[in-house]
Image (cartoon, rainbow, N blue to C red):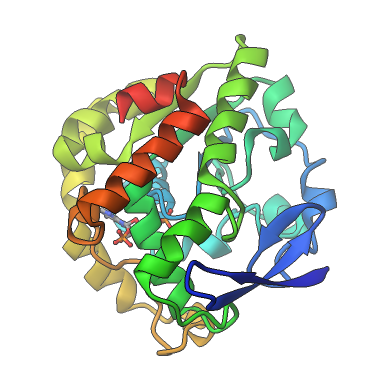
Length: 289
Ligand code: A3P
């Protein structure tokens, strides 16, 4: 894996690794990938997909509660419980049914067996300006990235896709193309902003898709409310804290929608939206954001 120093708009650099054409944070992260991409799925697996910082941890907690029928926060971390980016096949095999698996990969990198066997899949989308803000905080707090730039400098880096897992635009296009190529799949799409605005309603829709009891929705929404979840999750032992400059995990940061308004100037927002229109002008995803 080759080290890449990606310069931002001000010349500050982010250190990433290039693995088979994809940018990743650590040279360790994809070591099981070739095996995992050929993994076998199980009948009752659910695969959750999201571009980094779109709310995958939140979704994992919700779907785990719905699939197990138990509306209690897990004392485990998503990353240790079926996260395809770092798990080995042996670790994935050892998980009990029903497995709730997670990935940040693009559609065309998903394990093929999930597509061929039409497994249940949920995809979470978030306003890319909020993803950009969240990604800035994440990447400047990680030790590996060695990144100390400003948010203003970070915007062009994000737009160019020189961030972990590459371009947000590329990710969305990959899913749109994949779903067009596979009309036989029924993938449930959920928007971070809709989940924030009406958690119980969105969780009910999700429960219906998963054939889980809709009656759990109110309690699942209560349990996964941001501040309750953040307090509980941060109280657990956390082996991932060592990866952060402050030695504190910053996955659960603000948990808000439309935060970008406090970060972007009107001109920056306009430039960002122009890029959005250029890359995804005809995309049905953009119309719904
Ligand atoms: P912010 O950095 O904007 O706070 P991912 O899980 O895909 O890495 O996404 C992380 C983002 O989801 C972070 O956004 C995090 O705070 C937010 N998040 C995590 N749990 C949440 C919850 N229960 N409710 C709302 N947002 C949540």
